[in-house]
Amino acid sequence: AQSVTQPDIHITVSEGASLELRCNYSYGATPYLFWYVQSPGQGLQLLLKYFSGDTLVQGIKGFEAEFKRSQSSFNLRKPSVHWSDAAEYFCAVGAKSGGYQKVTFGTGTKLQVIP
Amino acid sequence: DAGVIQSPRHEVTEMGQEVTLRCKLISGHNSLFWYRQTMMRGLELLIYFNNNVPIDDSGMPEDRFSAKMPNASFSTLKIQPSEPRDSAVYFCASSTTGEAFFGQGTRLTVV
Image (cartoon, rainbow over all chains, first blue to last red; front, side):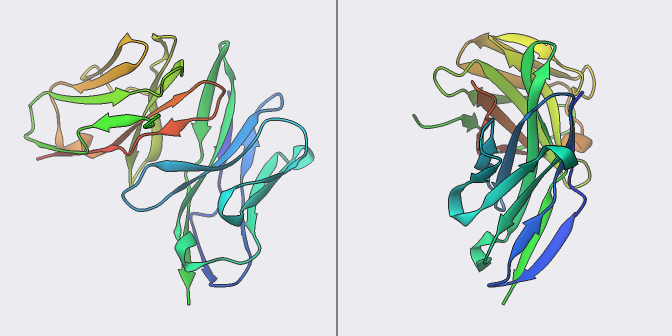
């Protein structure tokens, strides 16, 4: 069965600083990988996804993520954080389970942005 | 497409009452997921359907919870009887290629 680990529960960065959120997954084959963002009181919005091909994927709002098979990681990055990026971020893995596509989410990382 | 639509957005009910949450999928999507989100437990997958058939309901907390897909575009999650510990935000999401599209959620409060 697939699983996702987000080791950082809470991260604080200064506005304008760079950001990296960690994600490790467990799955026997190459999974589909996703990053979602959740603002307070809202549902989850897809930031970016990796299905195959180029291991560096670009997403919305200036985010990118790199798939590293050797490290089973899919870390999310942004070169310069804006105050509006404060939210909770979820990494997810989509994989076949019993022949059907199942999406499993990590526990999330809350991002605080300070002036 | 208006996206995944959930109703109601907020529900306050008394302990012991039946609660029904509703979800309309994105047209053409064939997978449906129900999630529950709490501060303590984070985002939990309760059940997911593929082509209207329940595939994995191992996340459903107990028999008080039930979910149905009467047709390809609509699903319900029912809690009967409800308990205060069921208070949470319930999300549904639909998918066709593995990427899940989420509704805005239903915030359930059981008093």
